Image (cartoon, rainbow over all chains, first blue to last red):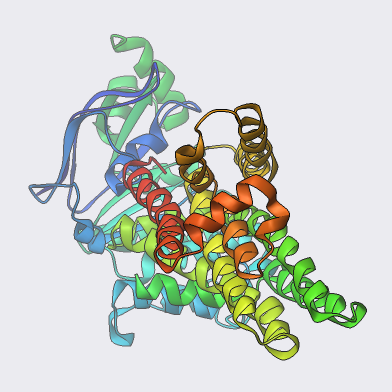
Length: 240
Length: 255
């Protein structure tokens, strides 16, 4: 089932197009890995979906409805950003409570398993200003998963996390997919995410070069690792 | 909006810079009243603090806070709440905390040492200045991507309003004193919120005579209740207009 559809989406910053005419559909029950060089437009793409960036052209639909002024569509979305920064004077527990409160969720409606699994249950009274980068990312991961989202957007989710925590976060992303959710992950570290991904979207210079299932990529290139398959595939595809 | 306001206020209540500002104001106010034998002299010293320091701190604090919470604002913006609710909550929390800091550091000593009508006028105009410069700071922080540039523009705006504009106006009045410029003086003064606040307080302490030719003009206009209402209304405009632009900017802003 199609959940998210980008139709001719473009974003221009001054004279530069960060995204050019992107057409893509993301379905229920899949993990799509969004990859591409630095500054290729990956973050702009997901920010357009999240409503953080307003597309210059085109439209994005979620479950058939064009996303626009009404923020309620974000009820189903969980987002883990690349860089997190929280109000310095609040504690971890207060932040969790705040976001729950803002989303209007009751205690039974939130999923607290990740808090314990990432070892944050013993640090709930810790000030957010005193956190290491890794712990900030763990807090960010909890916030993304806590509202039980059916669409999960993660921007470089493993950056800054220790291997154990990274594996835990990706396992939960896998669970969201298995429960019928849609997961979009941008990552530079292909090996970490490729085991999880169903399809790969490759963006270069703002254009979507391809959006293909993993199996097709491996079959077309004869390679068994994404890091080796991508260059082969790019040399075969016609530049946009 | 109320939820964003509540948690932003909790964060600001523990903000060291905000607490430091409140204590600094208290120290200056108490110091002036303790050092000066005449409470009126101490009060006039405080007027200078309100005219110069309060707008600067309100503006810079708002700008710096705006940049500091940018990533968190992004996180709020991906929640199912509108942009206006986010900005509204943040602006309200900033305004309330700046006003509370001022109430504690300035209002309280005035109430204890100099409980007069003129002290009330200073408190009201000082509060209006806080809101004006916090509104301008919000607009600047939202319009500029770089923090250093935002702070620089904020300093520039403050400097123009606190000194440059006033000097230009004085120069204009003296240079054109042989022409019928009276109708222009009051509207021109209203274009500077600091000038407007200064005039309101000075007229109240009957120091307009010290302001010479312009003082006479101001007294004639602002001396009446209607004139005072116009002055307050103009200060309100100085709050509402930048905030309206800030909301418009934030709604269309790419975060």
